[in-house]
Picture 1 (tube, rainbow, N blue to C red):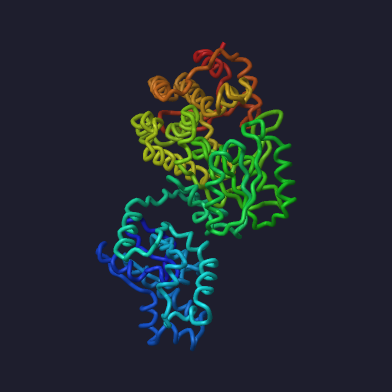
Picture 2: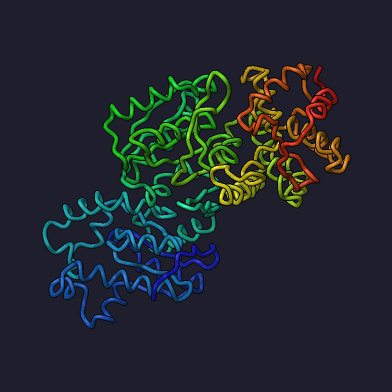
Length: 547
């Protein structure tokens, strides 16, 4: 029976034990199934029953290729008929199609055992064809070298030992109880699609999560000096565990690196490494790294595959999703770049624990922006949960990231390249016409972070909407109060209204010489408008702290 591409929810997923021969898959699988109240199946026994002969006889008469094809069909059939515990043969997980089936329908567990333990368990056994062709110790060592990087793609790894099966079974159950599958948001576009995975400790499992989508097991990590010191070793260890070769390019942190000069250095460095069109670029860092590495990937050899691993809240909920990449020009931010969609985005909420509270608030501005644009219920959720989330509630943080990413994915899917004459992807710029002017006037530095500028921009956009009679006046106080409660700025700190207007007139969102704004008709009801009187904009600036 063919298996569709639907990924089953955790409560409906089967459990598949993988590992080398002698790992105890059958002994532990039977005990696990009994304790969970699930049927148990041994794939090899099912194959023997269907073929009417032993595995050794199938190998001898028909060969390994014939056996593997039958094994694949049996595993597909077993996993298509309800929740079970399955113990396949040691080589089954090596087949890419079988791994894909298991990823969709089951939680996989690698029973990783030391070679001496495995050798002790298989010595003297003659029913394993692969062990009957030479020295068993040498064969097991070779199989371990070949298969361990693939087994490491399993969802869970449980260390095996000389302990009796009931002890390892208890360890497996504990691991299952502690396992939280990543939240998954699909970004479905006209020419491609990819997943955004959200959850804790994803960086330590990056190799397993990325291996299925990488064109080849080779990549180049682009990161900055600060992020490298915090997270690079974890990523490298994970890639090495799954056999993914990699090198690293490190640049100075911050907006000053987002230049054509840095971009050229990265491109030339990649070419010096003789990358090919199947070499993936991994962006490990915040929005600057994501934009810069993405543009590097877009331009090198006319397009390299690209992975986003954002390490700030701002980049997790905003810049890592949607495919916008680029660098700054002397005349403004992000004026040079390209659309280049990633193969996958890994949003590890655990890495956010290393961020200072100001950076978390910086990212939260983009979360609440999403709610203000098109989801009044999400805005109410933000009002109820933002303070606890910013104080370190991981579950609330992951849910906020998921909802923000899902909202942005839906908007991007409807207007991938921001070509709609109104609304569409341009809605994501709520508050940004004001924000970019504020950033330009304050020098794009640490005086005013992007999210802080967006927060002030949200107040200004709401005030402008109310001034024009488009939204209730009460919305201004509601938005201002909420942002103040989260510690975000909500007023202009004495900047010149005329200078801010001048910056707005250089904004790349100008159309036909007219200022384009995203305004609101109420919370969750944003729309684009390019018929805004300049005097109304000036009045909103002056009413909110400009001079």
